[in-house]
Length: 382
Image (cartoon, rainbow, N blue to C red; front, side, top):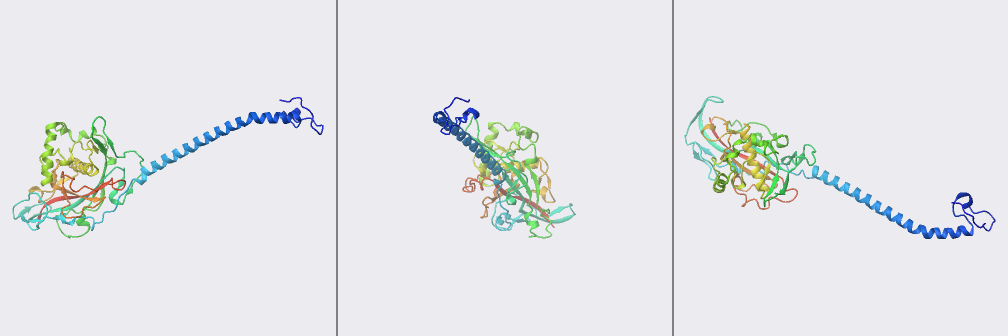
């Protein structure tokens, strides 16, 4: 406000008379001094408020950047993998043993029972008389991953960005001491011997090209245990302690040889095959969980009619429907993160992983897995 002030030395009126500020007279100088005493704390308080608000903005921006970085990392950075080398990453000794006419011609390798006759006769795909032959064929490649649409066996290629939707996890269960986990599965057609042309004009080989055949991200039954009950309603018969206790015998049998096909609800030492979904209620380790997920996927595809039978007398003339999995038809070999290429590193379904899984799971690049499926084949070779 204007005030009555003493004129300055030049005789002019103080500026405060006209402009409302402290002016240039003696009283104006006095008011300026007093005003500074009052304003300094106010300026300090205002400056501190600006500093606080600036820090808040800085923290907010940094938090947003951190969230965006974590989001982008979870969307892209977690997709890891490696192309499978068909020469160095494959345990070629898993082809054996080979049996011709009921007689084993290779000394090493674990095998199931084979037809004992010396000759066989078939009418499909053309009439022929031949000799029964049995061997193990690499036919499928399987990714077990926590990152949706991450093709581990194709070098860690991400098909699309889904953020955290459908992402797998490993967490502690509520109310008990177990851990639970969830994984996605990618199923590849991988007839390795055929497309490498190691054998030509061999009627017993599966003749198809490499392809991505199944993605569980597109399957509404995979992430819902209750909905998956549609495929396996018989699970209610085996959800009791007696049925689950029988899986201990299956574990012993698989560790010594092959699983019992009669115990089709058991996954050997890894757990129960039910439900046909990606949830593991008793997660012990990544290798154990991925092997159990792999067995469930095989059983699920058999139930859906996408996998067939090739073993026994019924398989001599071609594949046949097998809606109930026969675990003795398959062996598995890890190809990622650390390929199992040493001798006898193809393991029947359900065999304990304790003796060979050490060091095969490690943070970041070793938390997703890829397996090669070896399938037993009995064939009438003309």
